[in-house]
Length: 444
Ligand SMILES: [Fe+2]
Image 1 (spheres, rainbow, N blue to C red):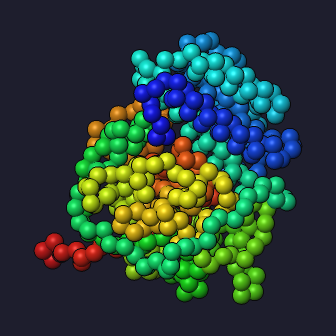
Image 2 (image 1 turned 30 degrees about the vertical axis):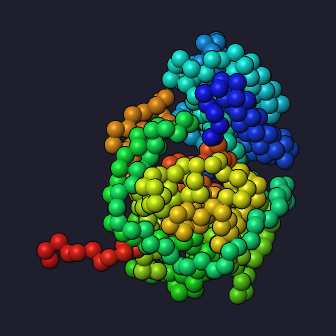
Image 3 (image 1 turned 90 degrees about the vertical axis):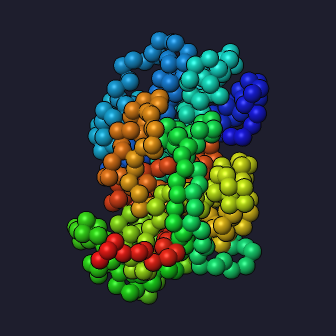
């Protein structure tokens, strides 16, 4: 999203293209399996795919046709079925959901009316309309559910049904292990990104001491050294809550890994394959990431440290939209949009490097940070409290940067994701950090 938003015709075109791209991806994910698989629950952690499909249409109807267009509900009786706050995912298969053909027809009908509404909309004059925000929010929402559906695909058993070419190789010579980010203030969050969500706002200055940050996410090879060194058997590396979870859940390796002789194998979208050592580690919980960092003599970066390394341009003292600048993500910058069904090897995407020399901050794997999910100073909920505010608190940890499963429209240097520290079916990895100067003691 970096087009000329002052021209309503161009903005309408851009919105339509984003809505259509999201629907093509939804179709790909829901047409890859038969109706029996669409209504099945592949994991108690996830909804049946057919729920996501009708929920996408229902939210689009609610925000665009009803809130912006002032239309009456098309099927008021189905609203409670697709309200994510009314029924936890584990209960959804037992609801009287629309069958696949009806769910598709409903979403299609909503979309037709939305495109008519868009064609006639001034795209200004109300907060939900200005710069096409409501439409942008709906396009991001559908893409976020496409990522959720891709997680369901990863959790389902059975033969592979999705395919994509491999990501690009590492390029531009070996990277230094870590990069230095000198002390100083930077601008975190945004006031100007037109489709930024409430939790990314407002922009504010944050002053950080100097720190070192891994120049790329932690690789499978490095993570295997943690395992081989007994990292999962040594409570020294784990927080008390993390150790309790490691014991009760029986964690011994990332999700989807299994050992065969001397080799680690992983299951990836229906393929069983050797774990590639040079790829960023994927499907680890916050507790595992935090334990690895402590074992390595390091720590997870804070959310502010992640964002400064990703956005701050020290020469101009300004924050960019992305590590490489303000241009929207292209295939040369980052592994986004499900173009590939795996992260790219550590050291790929030299054109996506940040001014401090860090790579792969955007795309590949979501990166756990040490920070709890909270509102920035001056936060105000928009357009509804359930978007972010109800999740603020220490029970959620922030993830940054997006994964190969995240669409460019739902990814920015300011974008914030959050989840429970036990979660690992998500496309989560991490990188580590350390203070540049030893902290001075507090009089002890
Ligand atoms: Fe949703």
